[in-house]
Length: 573
Image 1 (cartoon, rainbow, N blue to C red):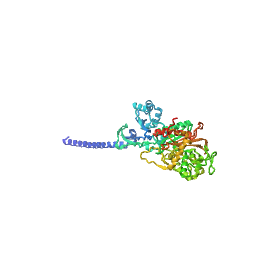
Image 2 (image 1 turned 90 degrees about the horizontal axis):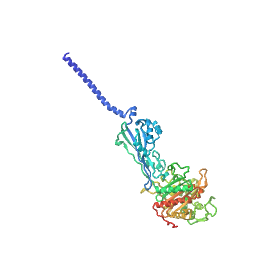
Image 3 (image 1 turned 60 degrees about the vertical axis):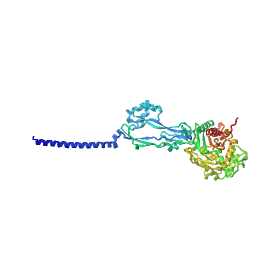
Image 4 (image 1 turned 45 degrees about the vertical axis):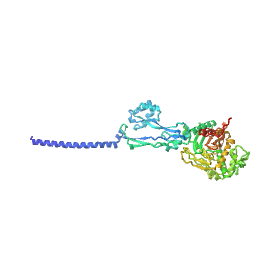
């Protein structure tokens, strides 16, 4: 083979090698370009099988907002939240899901069978809660003996540091931390706050690789709610009311204490007998009857009509009225009006002091029906007070279309009208102030918060009514419950209990009540107590003998606590 031919063969072979090298290099370049594209495709658009096997590369977790506290007027905590923990399982992260129940039973004390049942229904999930909130010892046990695929999830827990104090008033929350009753329900939006989120990039073992600052939506904690309630006074009210309900064999009792200067509710107590059919297993779920259940106020309503008649000029305080001596009074239309005790002709002042139904009916006929209806409306009866208690009702007032002579004379005695304890307490503030009534509030008034008030009576009318009700405490139905420390003015009431079905009234069952303010010259408290259906076999059913002692005792307890000095000298005997 000639050298020339050999050179041609070598050139041809070198050309082929160069061509193949170029092709292979091109293929290598293309392959290297396809790798990152494939990575992007696998990251962003993986097929279903791969996605299930690898899991998500990003995960979003909720960032819990802290529920606001409920505080009393002095900042004492009535309800607060802390973190607790519950167990969850990631079935894909366990060595054997079938053994998780046994492991948790030994480590935490959970029911193995219940854990297995919960897991068996959700084996394809990455998060299966298997317990309620754990005790601290259980949490410590799991942290000291970790189990693969098992974790602890934080859960908010609501605490009520003062137990059942103000139970139906404060209410409670459910497992999801949503208010179910009371203030917890009424103020849900303010208390709950707004939860946030955190989005993180994770590896296949769910470990966090990166959290971008823009992927954090911080939570907003709920607002703290400061109530007007004073915890100490609330406890006084509940303890004294509960003792009265037990002592009297009553179906229940209601009690409201108001600061008449501001309209702030210092205590709102509602007690049911242990065997009452309306009582819940958890008292926090009971409706608060001070707001929801109206009742006929009886003679505690008389001061309002008495003052209105005096102010309208249809009667003078010392005018002698023809009240009967020994038989029921008959109105101009023949209605019979009975008195508990017949005392003969009496002054208008004595009509209130001795609580004479006949005298109230006589004066009611002198007032126009429109005047009485207007008074009832201006005092706030027939509509809710808007104080902030959930479920509040407006009571029952006979509409104008059905208002009759019977209604006119009945309302003057506190019958044919139903009120709530909140409404009556607010209206009575007119006598504890200068004739104006404030709006009631369950929330503490902040500095500078406007005090909305409405004038009902002139100051001179209030002075006369207050003086007459002071005499009630000295010579009338309240003489046996007058405090030895503080001067009081007030009124008792004893109304027959209405029959639930069929109408009419029980002859020997009553709703007994007493309302008073103290001290007389500068009232710091209005206290109203209602005793539901006291057992007559106990020998006490009138408002002065059932609810009266409760009101007196609370005046003597609460006023010293508030720093109000006694205005009466204690009898040395």
